[in-house]
Amino acid sequence: MSSIEQKNDYWVTFWTTHEIIKAKDPQCQIGRTVNKISIDQQKWQFHLDEIEEILCLCPDDTLIDLCAGNGLIAMPLSLRCQSVTAVDISNTLLEYIDTQLYPNITLITEDARNMNLPTKAFSKGLMYSALQYFNEHEIIGIFAAIYQFLKRDGLFLVGDIPDIDRLFVYHNKPEWVRAYFDSVKNNNPVIGTWFKKDILVAMAKYVGFNEAVVINQHPDLINSHYRFDLLLKK
Ligand SMILES: C[S@@+](CC[C@H](N)C(=O)[O-])C[C@H]1O[C@@H](n2cnc3c(N)ncnc32)[C@H](O)[C@@H]1O
Image 1 (spheres, helix red, strand yellow):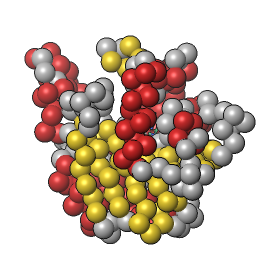
Image 2 (cartoon, helix red, strand yellow; image 1 turned 30 degrees about the vertical axis):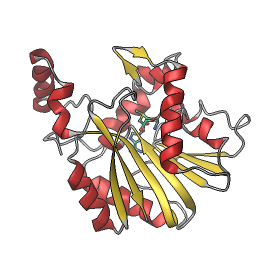
Image 3 (cartoon, rainbow, N blue to C red; image 1 turned 180 degrees about the vertical axis):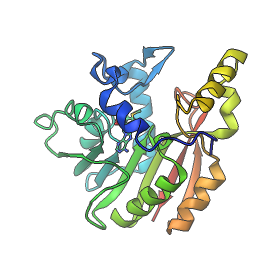
Image 4 (cartoon, rainbow, N blue to C red; image 1 turned 90 degrees about the vertical axis):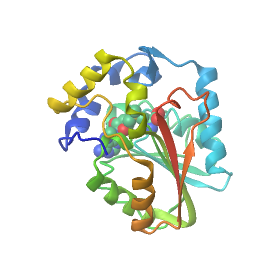
């Protein structure tokens, strides 16, 4: 884990009040940009195909999308499965999801650290580009909740996790290293928590998952130089 001790509600405040959530472009609303430019649809489709393949999504799957944001993943995947439950703390982001157009999506405005969901209700799930908003203590609770609401043999993809062993691959210029340590000093995180792969694997096993497998991202994914995926199997 990185040494930044995140204030508990720092990210909740960010994702419910920051001006980016009102941006025009959907990828900008959730901050999926490279050099402040949002990724194009063709590239994004490649990311969606990767996610779908990792989850082996099929028409009878009941999917949960934790920290779903504005539904950039939930909407297209809802066309590939029976139902999607999209959970997020930001009502503003969730409201971008058109449930008339995607009637098998259910929206839940809830804190992922305090979920009240039925046990064994979902066959598959994901949390993409969001694990960094939680600390170790909170993630043990979130993993335990995921374990509870997944069906037997259920799969859960924790995607796009910042890799602490790539911290200086990402901050690869002296001024960016300085900016990183400024953010640590001021307790004002930019990315959030950076993770050690084997600690997350051990944490998932501790919570009870049968398998926890690290997946190195395809090099064509925009964050593959400093992020990885983790697939949990109940
Ligand atoms: C970078 S966005 C990713 C959105 C979506 N998963 C995607 O990849 O398109 C991170 C999301 O995490 C949500 N989030 C942050 N903290 C949360 C919390 N405590 N509970 C639920 N959602 C949270 C934010 O509101 C935001 O929608």
